[in-house]
Amino acid sequence: TLPSDITGFSSFNKESGKMHFNKGAIFCNLFLADELNRTSSRTQAALLEAMEEQQVTIDGESHRLEAPFFVIATENPIETTGTYPLPEAQLDRFLMKLEMGYPDKAAEVKILNRFLNNNPVTELESVCTRQDIANMKKKAKEVYIHPSLINYIAELAQATRKMSEVAIGISPRGSIAMVNAARAYAYVNGRDYVVPSDIKELSVCVWAHRLVFSTGLVSKGSREQAVNAAFAQVEVPTEEWTK
Image 1: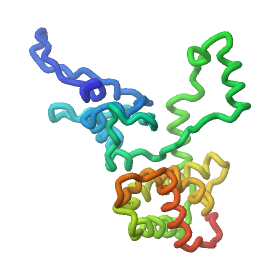
Image 2 (image 1 turned 45 degrees about the vertical axis):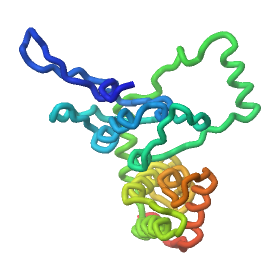
Image 3 (image 1 turned 180 degrees about the horizontal axis):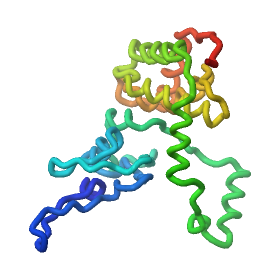
């Protein structure tokens, strides 16, 4: 996969005598990059501008991406041959990193039964519209987060930056991600305000993948331990969390 396959490219139109922009795969609402770590670093970098600024720039001209726009990526966690680890700047742009793991026995039996006679993937249907997503995003932005919790998140981020084993702690982008994730989490749980447990519940999936350690080989457990250590160092605020 080349960067131009994702972002698009310009070509000369003989009939009009002008350059024509050919849109790449990124011009969609939901972009799924399957096994992103199998693509080259240049191809990975093609997503940076799109993820941060919701646009791509080709030959000096910027092209806006239609809202809502999301990037979901998967990684092959086992094989290393032919893979390119995602750089810190790219990891920091992903709101969350989730570990799927194996299904339990009951879930696996359910999967097997669903695939007995047909492929359920071919029968997938839309569960919401673009406007539904826009409305939910707007509602999540209206969720109240107490100033004490804003300060709590900042203190937690500061704590990760002071750890001796951590070379790069949580960035301001990571702090913003936590605020947004906590508000969205409160919204889907039927609340119009954030509570400290929302932040704790989301801490590993929002923050662990953003940490860069001083040593080379780092396990998933090390990242989780570092995040949990930050929470152990910072006192949980106690307030009336509603407005």
